[in-house]
Amino acid sequence: MHPFFLERPRDLEAAIALRAQAGRNDAPVEYIAGGTDMVQLLQEYVRRPERLVSLAGLLDNRIEVGPQGLRLGAAATMAEVAAHPGVIEQFPVISEALLESASPQVRNQATIGGNLLQRTRCPYFRDVGYEACNKRAPGSGCAAIGGENRWHAVFGTSENCIAAHPSDLAVALVALDAVVEVKGADGERAVPLVDLHRLPADTPHIETVLEPGEVIAAIVVPASPVARRSHYLKVRDRASFEFAVVSAAVALEMDGTRIQQAHIALGGVGTKPWRVPQVEAALGGASLDLAPLQKAAALAAAGAQGRGHNDFKIELMQRAIVRAVETAGARA
Image (cartoon, rainbow, N blue to C red):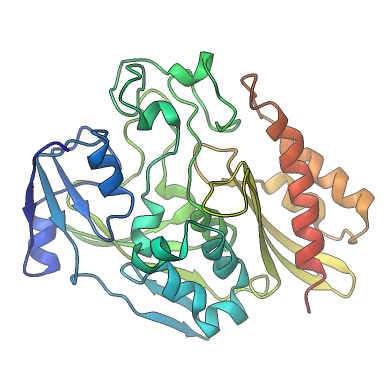
């Protein structure tokens, strides 16, 4: 592990003043909260900050469910949110996404804010034995494009990076139009979660729109008629503690046996959580019969680019959408 200084600010204002940053390897000062992802990356020399700024005890950890929707303090743990009765009842896709993530031990420690900022599981990023990784070492290349890329993205890629975004929770929250409350030296701002993560383009090492000194303070999910009838489907290589090969977060508003409104986001296939508005539009007015669901799901393939080993994801994500819509639609 590369040596670093650990700062323990007295309050959030002091932490913000230190202008640490999250989600990029060239930042000399970084924030740490639960640390479940950070510690592993430090141990493996993937991240080598000069200083870490602890947010322990400085962020809100409340979980509030009311008529306006859901507010999650950034320091609430994955386990706390997944087990909250209001979340289970009114936002089941969130609880399911969390329970499909990591292990019970990790969920007890990992924070909601940190979960959204976790780094990709691309093996070329996480193994410093590979020199070519533009996320870890800007300008070095992308070993995944010509290498083993079964786990990688088919949406939002560039010639500089094809790493898939890892967070299950972020996919569920994007499907529900969640907003991130951000605090920084210039005050507070609200960022739609769909806009929090950047596409790699020619700067894959810059993963979010957060500025130095900005921290995620809370996540707000607005009340919505689709939230209760929602489901998270995760396809993975093993039954537990595994990241998504493909996932689908689906939230529906039904009018009898027909879909009135659909929200769908995909995971495991994009360099960020991937919303599919063309599929959502096609499902409007559709029944839950297999044929119209398959026809709508086929539209998800538009713009997808496989790189060889991950070509199968294009078909698999369509099947995942159909199954997730069927499951959500059957809920009372």
